[in-house]
Each structure stands twice: as structure tokens, then as C-alpha cells.
Length: 229
Image (cartoon, rainbow, N blue to C red; front, side, top):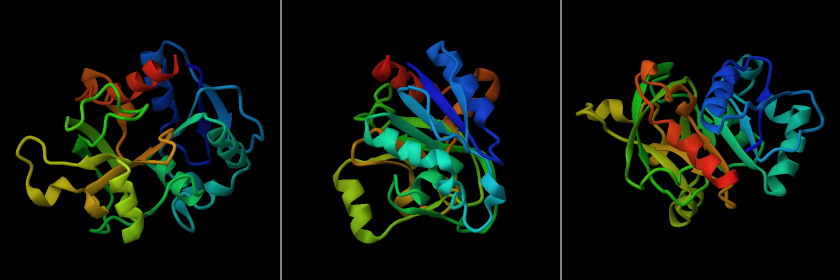
């Protein structure tokens, strides 16, 4: 599996994404600068977490107009898989590659902790190594992770099995802590219509080593290796 990780001003999880992809695929991804106008020939493009352009205007709004995004749109249309994590998810929605929008957390506070995550579907290149209904433990770190879309869009996502992950209780967690940001229907990650683009707020790249407290994120990258190798 050949992959690339895109770097924007303010990205801060690109090295984590590189480490995860290298550890699980056995092949280091290429780093691509946001002002580049060409992409290497790859199977997967990862847009990592961070605070692109300091989150000015709206989170991901400026990055969505960086030169590389036009190439990412073309690559996605041609069949390349795209993964947006946290700020990457925000960028994908702002660029129109995924439906909905990420709003300020409901409590208007930055949240940084582990959360429970339910795998809603194993029918995608990103989740096939999991079982539907499986509960994961993965960290979040964001201030704008409150997923929202209009009713018709949410119904379509539900009907088409395009909600990849939802926030879920784990280890007797109190109900008020289950959904860390107030996301509609506790949505934590969604797929595009082709099922080749995924955006999610939690950080699977930070849940691949026992030292980090969880290895539950490995399945996402293992799924991609299984699909794309």
C-alpha cells in the first residue's frame, strides 16, 4: 500500500500518522506539502489532525482551498482512498468531499481524553478488520468536533450505512460523558457515497501501541492494508 500524508501550516499529527502507517503497513508514506500541485501515485491520502491556519475563519475552511486540495479531489474521484482525521475531517467537509459540518463542541470547551467508539459498519475499506458493533477505546483532542447535518442528509447517511463510528459508553462511563462534543446522533465518523473517503474526529493513529493505552486504532490501518495491498 502506497500512501501520502498531507502537511498544512498548523498540522500537528502528521508524524503520528506516518508512524502508524509505517508500523502497520511496513512502508513509510510520503509527506506532501499543502502548496504542492501534484500528488505522488498512491493508494491512500491521509489528512491529519492539527489546527490548520490556526483555525481562523472556520476550522478547515482555509485549508480546504489550499492548492493540494484540488488534486486530492481529482484523486478521490479517480478511486484513491482518502482519510481525514480530526482537523482532516473538518477539511474534508469544508472541501465538499464529505457531507455535514463540524461545529464548536456543545460545552464550548476543548476536550482531550479517551472515548468509547462503536463500529457501526464493517462494510468499508477502513473498518473491515473490525466487527460491526465492536466497541473501541480511542482518544479525541478537539474543540470543534460537533458533527451536524440537515435531517435529510443524516437520514441518507443512516439509510446508506455510511456512519462508520459513533461515540459509545465504555467501562460504565457516565451518560453525560459518552458524547464528548454533542454530535448529532453521536456521530463520530462518516463515509462518502463511494465509501472510499472517511472522516472521523477521534485519533486512531494515537491508539496503536500498548504504551499509549490502547491498540484499538490498529484495525483501521490494518483494514486499509488488507484492502489496498
